[in-house]
Structure formats: structure tokens, C-alpha cells
Length: 500
Image 1 (tube, rainbow, N blue to C red):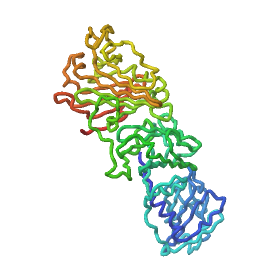
Image 2 (cartoon, one colour):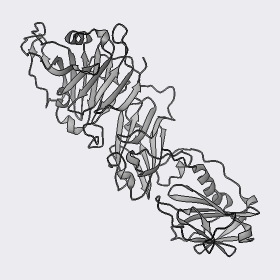
Image 3 (tube, rainbow, N blue to C red):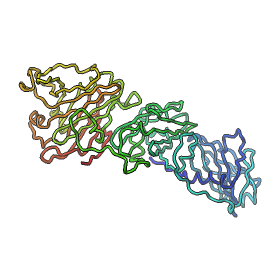
Image 4 (tube, one colour):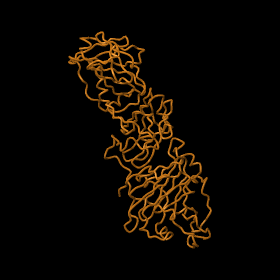
């Protein structure tokens, strides 16, 4: 999974030039050789050759040669071996290579018994002076001093890189890194031909940042080097490299820690902390839920992403997010700013909602929302979609209700009130919170309140995932231990422990 690359070593090698005050003498139109540094170590000559390596198959120096002291040195495919002019082994010679930012840094050691006392290395018509080892002063290790989105990528030298975790053994992104320094900075190196735009479980070039509160930010790269889906984001793309900045104000709610990877895949980077966060900065604290249509008390509680399709969102934002919390009663919250859902004017949240208890399909409610006026009179068939902007309150019944009771004080048969729901229809997003009374649930299904261990909810108009929360009862529902979304097949999408 990991491909740890010694970028500090690369930086040291490249740093020889500036330290020694040497010029590269590379031909202006030569895109093959980037730099050469040669040193005389007494018995051996060491050559550090930096050549182009724009993708995993790009080895332009393979089949070409260096000349030292009139003796030729040739390279096999992949820069894996060195040979003499007759393609025979050179006793005592060696080569090792490491990948950098679109370059391959090859360290070649040749015994002077083969080259003699040479003073220059010749390559592709250019001569490079061989310096005595005593003249080489090694620079200090690379130090992180911040990231600038300028397309040079040099400031990523001190940041550790990893392969991006991809499904089915794909390797469209061969190196990646992330820095959370107030804003979020992301580095990607693809395998060529803008393959970063085709990475992911469905080949759509989508990536996601998931916060420690379960909130998801989705963005997509295109072949023109643009980043879509995030206001204020910037991207620099040259060759196979990308560097991206996500501004702090565009990040979802978080308490200073994020994860990053391909969208709908396991994250490659987890628990990435905000380097600029101070102890004085406020967090999204959680101290319980009040049913009041203000919604702010949900900010500090972990949510789970809901996606309508197997391939996830068809746009650059997640379909929706939701959470369940319980103490004595059961509370739910759901939010969407996906235009395809919001155009329903609340209908995406008022229809096809299922609440299940203890993972048992025999003990579940199918929300039937009704309107109740100030006098308690029930409107069994209120308008539930295409609603104007505003906040609406509904009462929650089950789908098996008789629909015959005139008011909430005179209930017949299965016309039972299980809870209430506030729905807010706003420009650009819809939001709902609800409460279901555990006492009424227990009465409906014939078990005690203490028997409720797991509660799951599915919003069928938003997606097929079940939002799940679980707790341990101690004379009533005593708190949430986890909140997650589970798709068909019991795949856990997100799980976050909650402390009270």
C-alpha cells in the first residue's frame, strides 16, 4: 500500500549543485538530463544523474551512455544495471535509483580501475567537471516552510509521500501527500496522461476530505488542471504533478482533524491535524440535542454521508449527511444542499423514511408525517413537497395509521403519535431534525425502553444507506457509542466514537 520515497535524499542530491556553485551545462532543448553531479572518492567515481521520469515507463537514459576517461557506461532498461561499451558487466560498479517529482535520481558508482583518473563526465554532448569529494559540502535536510501553489513543487520535498489507495490494484496516482496548515494542501503525482482525472472506484477523478465530525467534501479534477466542487480552491498542474489548495473557509465542520483519499474509498491519510490550530480556537463541542429547529447543537456531533447511487454523487458535492442520537428519546438530523434533491422543496426528506430498531425488520416505523394545528386537529394529508421557503413542523405517525382520528387527543386504533419533525426549506439547502419517543416505540412493539440497543434510519429519497447509532442502556437509552452509515451488504462507510 505504501511507497515511502526518500525525498530528503533526492533533495540532498539536487542540492549539491547549488552548494558547489556548479552550473548544469544542460542543453536548452534537452529534456532528458536535468542535472549531473560527479565526485572523485579516491578509488571510485560517483555520478548523481537526474533524468526525466514523467511516468512509470519513462526512462529516456535507458540505452544511452556516459563517458568517463574515454570509457563508456551504458544503462539497461529501467536504469537497473550499468554495462560497458560491449554491454558487459563492469566489475565493482553499481547503480541505484529513486523517484522524485517527475525525475529519476540515479546514483552511479564506478571503480577508477575502469575509468582511470578522469576529470570530466560527458553526456549527450555536455561535459561535467568531476569534483574531489572533499569539496562537496552536504546541505542540511529539507525543512517544511509552508506550501505555495506555484507549480514548482519544491516545497513538498520535506513532506512524506504515499501511494494513493485505489481499488482493484489501480495505480493512477503513484504518489500523494497532504498538509493541513489552516488551509489544506494536497500533492498528487499521476502515472501520466492526466491519469489523476480517472482515478477512483468509478474512474471519475473524484477525491474527498472527511472531517473528524464525519462531514465530507468532494472535489473533482479535470484534464485542464481545474479543481471542481470547492469554492476558492486553486490548483497548479504541470506534467504528471498536481498541487491543490482547499481554503479553510470551504472545509466542512471539523475539530482540527481530517482524512483524505479517493472518494468512496478507504482514506489514504487519516487523522491529519491542523498544524495552525491553537488551544484557544473554539471547537464544535457537543452537549446533547434539543428538538428546537435551530440545528446548531448538531454541529459537534458526528454525521455520516449518504449517497444515492453506487458511484456516489453525480455532482461535486455529497448527496446528503445525516446522524442519529439518543438519550431518553431518539433524535435524528439530515441535511442536503444537492440541487437534485433540493428542487423537491422538502419532499426528499418527508417521504420514504424508515426507522428500524435492533436490526429487526419486524420492528420498524415507516414515517407518515401529518400536520397538526394549534387546536390539535390532525391534517392526515398535508402538502409534503414543493414547499415554499420556511420552517414546518409535522407529527410522526406510522404508515399503518387508520387516518381516522380527528385530533391528537382522540386517537383511534393505530393512529399513534410517535414523535415530531421540524423541516426547514431554504435557498440552496433543506434540513430536518426529528424526535421519536422511546416510550411510544416500546408500546408499539411490545418491548421495554431498556431493550432498545440499536437504532437505524434510512432516507430512501436521498440514498440507500442506513444511518446507525448504538448504545448501552442503563435504565433508559444512555448515549451513543457510534454513528455510521451502512449500505446494502453491511459495508461500513464511516464510524466515529463519541464521548459524553
